[in-house]
Image (cartoon, rainbow, N blue to C red; front, side, top):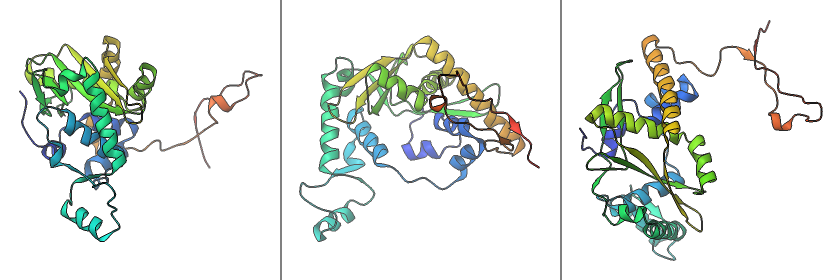
Length: 280
């Protein structure tokens, strides 16, 4: 079943999340730093995504996390500093960011699918947390879908992106491992509830003009590959926890070459194998 908790409570829970898998995919030190290191400062891109989520998802309230800077007001002036101090802890939207959020919301309302989410026509809940225990590793897992239908038949994930076209968003799917997220959320919800959602849908909206929207359903092959990647990452985490050793990239000196696109093509040269070498 779903657990109703705040975003901060969810992120502080020690269960393994998709972002933990992403860190583990890089190295053990990345994973350990994410779990035990000091919090990383937020970025403007992350803040903009948070504001859009709070604006678009049913049940969320953007006024609780963000405020718009009055037009013409500068942070460096006395009035501007007073405004910033009065809204400490909230995301401050300048005119450009506010315009982008408004245009993204308009674009979402114009798309036949995403308008149902924005208008509340789709019956479900936003930001519900799910927890389960993995049978193979014994690790506790978690996920927090942006939106899930009440009958658990559909998970919707809202993404801001630079390019929402099929090819453009496909690149983001790989770069940010969204294919792992789709598989992870479907599996964790199924383990937590006994009901497997029928589909995972990405609603991608562009941050730059012209703020196009693309809606994409994760196919079976994507889910299969995502699950395989998630399993590899989860097994690494289980091993690190058992041994207490969190590896970096490699403990050997390895051969490295230029990327293939920089190598001569006329002689068919290819990059040498990256084999470890002994240093004396």
